[in-house]
Length: 236
Picture 1 (cartoon, one colour):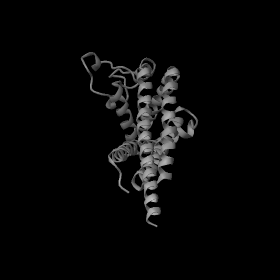
Picture 2 (cartoon, one colour; picture 1 turned 90 degrees about the vertical axis):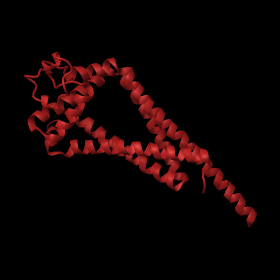
Picture 3 (tube, helix red, strand yellow; picture 1 turned 120 degrees about the horizontal axis):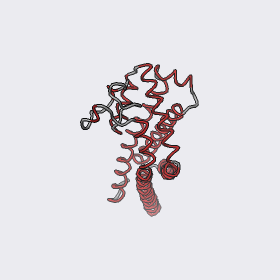
Picture 4 (cartoon, helix red, strand yellow; picture 1 turned 90 degrees about the horizontal axis):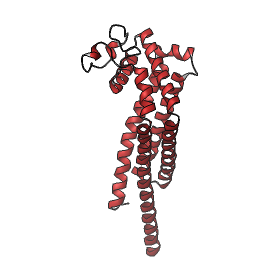
């Protein structure tokens, strides 16, 4: 069954969307599984299995799994042009889009609480790295420090125990003291709440675009099936 120009564009949009989602899904699932089952983090789960760190890790695993499930359904539907698979894909996209927008609004309205939870998650990783000196935890801290340009919980070069994971200082004063990560993270989610909400809503908009393409592809497949059935009845 051949697709016209609009159908082909929508099919490639779905392929592109699935490729991005697959990369993000594998990254989130891999990080979540590593944090859950790594020897260096088992102690933290045993001590505080229902705390912020555990909840954050479980969220990573669930989110990564859901994203990969959506990718598999969408890829199968787009490649095989199966209506049932594409219908399921569209339902999953709609649910994810609504969830993304809802989370963005909730993150904005509860920005202080979100900031507190993120700081607790960071402090858990920071403490565990100081105890175990695990390479994976060090890479996680390095990523956070580079992304937010902060350094540990003190920021003071001569006192900070994780300074090897801190970014390069900007200016003379940062050689002595850099911004502390708990303060930077908390301020980011409090004062940049509109930006955070915008990111979630933007992702939701991308999901809606993929949903619209899926619906267009479904309509074209239905039209082609109807035309093929009409030709068959005319011939026989």
